[in-house]
Image 1 (cartoon, one colour):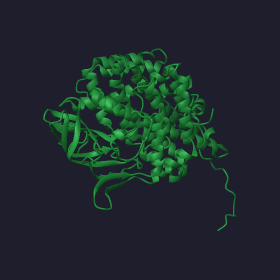
Image 2 (cartoon, one colour; image 1 turned 120 degrees about the vertical axis):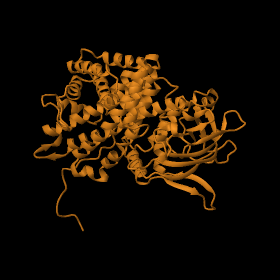
Image 3 (cartoon, helix red, strand yellow; image 1 turned 180 degrees about the horizontal axis):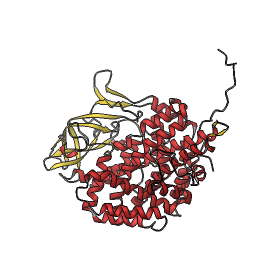
Image 4 (cartoon, one colour; image 1 turned 90 degrees about the horizontal axis):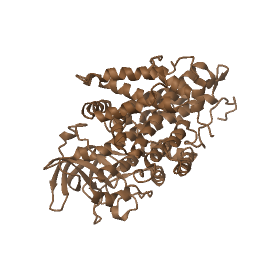
Length: 545
């Protein structure tokens, strides 16, 4: 039927054709702050190119197509031969290839590599989060492999390559490879020391055959995996290649792919090992210690990934309300909507500033910064990832019923939001990790207190919050039941200190008044009305500069 009855007006144009990096003032300022002047022009240029690509109609279409066409498991070929391959939509490969070519698996060996990569990861995954897992695993495998110089020399150049080559072939025949990880088993979950996968030594130095399973295997289409198994000397770390040097397939049975809440474009699988060839990484019995740096790096990516989801959700909400009229004016100009948007923008900026500060600590690589990361990474992972779901849900509501419809893209963000809080250890695991550091590594607390202490005197509410936190930390007896409370407070104090030092006064004032001063309700949009909320919203608006 011809649409002749009326003219449709008051519609919001799509948020497309913009530079995702340049439009994010919190991120661009963090990059300028943490990257040395000699490297900054090159970093700005590469991030600007990535930002323009991420905001393009093409990348947004790739993201939608990859999400709408999830991977498929092909266990056998037409002749009945076992192949255990995962088939992806071409758009997923395009997203991943663009990311690899932009250096999102290359942080460990170039100047300001971690800040550049973190900023790029935050920008590019706003197009679609599902391909972030193999990027994260490949990047994070480097420090674990460095425990074995021979393995590192062989694999690190391939892991940090800017060339993406899909398909299973011997690693020596590829210009670049991807890595995955397998720790979790059916009977143990997070308690990896109860793993039952066995590793039987072979005559060759460091060679083993594995028998067992992995209940969650990230990126099962990757070229290699770091896994944990019980060797004669205890729980150990192993490198499992998908294809052996002679071109034959390693035994790597993909039983099925997980049907997940979100993260639809990415494959997560259940794996069976049955005489699977592996090479030991590190010493027998020290598997957790060997793989822990990989876990820490992926936990930081959980923070960055959540910051990316929050930023995209807030950008969409502000963009929508800046173009949609209701009750006689633009929604963004209504005091109550402005309060909601400002509240969301605070959460987004705090997550971005914290994530980039952690990346800068990796680049500095001093003893003090390593101690700081020991506490700050699990605390940030605990808090930022938990805030993500609340932020995205509220941002969706800013679009009203339109936000609840798939075409808006907001439901995809909301389904993705809980993932980073669960991946690499859920909330209780992070909280207990912080407690262990507090009890066993006093230098970690010293480094944390030095960091937040750099903002002393900048805001009286921050000073009071630091004092209250010290009181809370003075008694660590029977502390487990208070762990979440303590870690939440540590994360908020750290975010407040960073914003007090680096954010505009209207941002730090609003954050400290609400998150630290207690002048805040139980929902977003309950900031004190006397704050400069219009400036907070204007700062977060995604417009080209």
